[in-house]
Amino acid sequence: MTRMTRTALLSLSAASAAALASFAPSAALAVPAGGYADLVETVSPSVVYVEVTNSGKGQPSSRGQKDHKHGERNSESHGQRHGQDRGERQDNRFGRHGDQQLQEFMRRFGFPDQDFGQNRGQNREHSRPMKSAGSGFIIAEDGLIVTNNHVIAGASEVTVTLADGSKHEASIVGADPLTDIALLQVTVEDALPVVAFGTSEELRVGEEVIAMGSPFGLSGTVTSGIVSATSRNINAGPFDDFIQTDAAINRGNSGGPLFNAEGDVVGVNTAIYSSGGGSVGIGFAVPSDLVRDIVADLQDDGVVDRGWLGVQIKPLSPDAANVLGIEPGKGVMIESVVADSPAAAAGLKAGDVVLSFAGAEVGELRDLTRAVAMEAPEAQSEIEILRRGKSLTLEVTLGNRASQDA
Image (cartoon, rainbow, N blue to C red; front, side, top):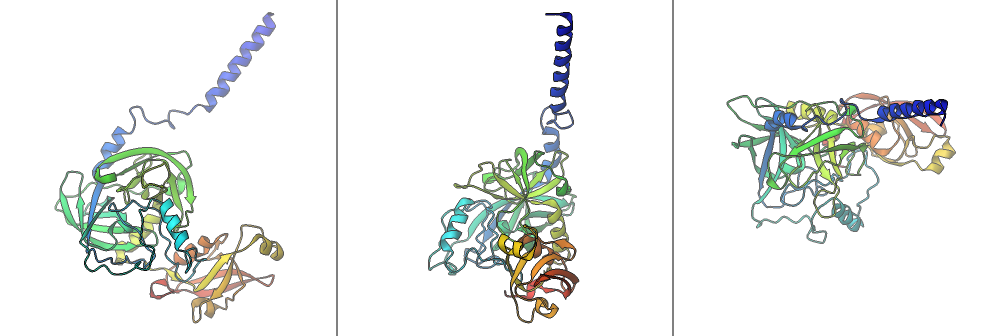
């Protein structure tokens, strides 16, 4: 081998090593030496165990007859927020003939066998009180606690166990079935340790996250993983925008926090995909940016007020988009307009294609539903539509979704 050849090979080896080094994770991106022990020690005192007793009378939650969520007693979370969306109703996947689809959907998301027969919805007056459980976390020193709605739905008594082992009766400040978020209050003499919300919008796929809670009643359990996906739609409801993680989430984890590496709450663990009720590495958390807004609304008066438009919508097929000259993935079609609704007053008609609402582009059903619901009742908003090939912008004054039966 000549000196020139040897020099060339050494140069190539050095370049290859430099290239490989550029792909290696930097110290800033790696898991801290010793793991997350220091972080867990800091935030764990703010994570609580939530025990619930309900009357056993089969009372439905505030969501209505399609809310089949339960706490630890049955199975944890399970993405089942498929109640009919008031106002901007989407295609009903579980309609009059949808029992089989509903049963399969619930089976996939970890629910035990349910009664889908003729006895469904009957009031079981003679049932014994039932116990269930979940998790939560403290966001205010005076005892405000965030958990899941499905953990406390139908509760006659809620007990919170703090990290120091002390038990406290909790009152329900408010709950929002559509986002599965609830707010509790315990009365304490001393200031409690709290955790703060981070910004979920800044989460990146592959980022390290930590889940904490009380799976199977085992308080203070910590699991870690990564963000597997963001803005995940699992067809659970109009606000589907879940963080997907492979951090283990099991029965009893519902309502517990999902932390980033800085110890900020970036999500509320609420659902798993599972055929048997246990973790298979596919869990879902409500993003903190949404939770923060819902908590603020609940803290104000115990309810979440949302705008109501009054239309039934359906996806715009690729063929229809092609005929209308619309780029695929943009717009949804109005199937029908509710009589005497804000949509009717604004002049919206069946067949109109909605392109944007209040400045937010509409590409799929949940985009319009979310955009409308995030506006306050009586808010005046502009809606951009395509009608018979012509672009129109109409102004609509929204109603209050809470006052609607459909």
